[in-house]
Image 1 (cartoon, rainbow, N blue to C red):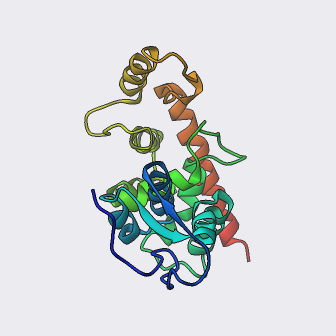
Image 2: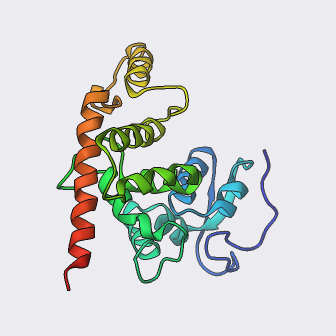
Length: 212
């Protein structure tokens, strides 16, 4: 662990002599790192991972870690007109599978986390093709949906089902003095229904797009 010898704020890239500064240590660095992941700034994430303290502008720190500012940044980056990422045409799927008012809400699993998952594991975007295919079968949709949810809850879709992941997550949770059971992964049956609702939400999106 080290402290970088720098005269500029890594957030705004301006001289630290311009404005009030603050020395951020372990817990603050963890917060900055999480914010970097959510903002999809891998260079910042790599910079922070080996540090035990860093000096930044006080105002920059507050803005960078503010949840509202992070959400606004993501909304701007992922707008259909300004975003040029390879999965910009999959945003309808991401919106539906991560939970919306016409599908289901995944407790404790927000859109920021879902977007970060797809940025980090782009192979999961193959599942989007199923949800964007008008001829997809029920079996294809439910299998694709379960794979996404297993990954979202920290499991490996290649080796675990949602029920297995739910059981192992419960065993770990039982050892804690305090835990919210709503944070457990959904059952396979619940996930299948969520996947079908998400699929029909995507279908509504295609049909709406066809209306002149």
